[in-house]
Image (tube, rainbow, N blue to C red; front, side, top):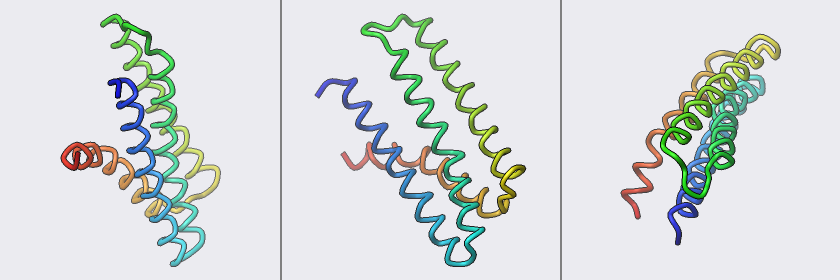
Length: 126
């Protein structure tokens, strides 16, 4: 398997684990209150969707043989886009839709923690 294909498969696995994480957390909060469940889903989406945006941005700007400077700028721009998307989604969830902060924050934090921990667990497993 080529290195590029392996990276795409790895990234998709991490994104899938993140999706499952915030859907389960949203369902658990929904058992308490539907508004809390929807708030948790909004928090999870605020962490997950920017990761998808970043991955798509990185894959689109990846050439056959990337130049070091181009790769660094592409990564930096992707990260800026990811942070701005996260802030926008959190602001919309809290200010426009009136999401409850506690489940929103816990789901967002859980997805971010999965983003940090999942690669280590996957690499140690394989």
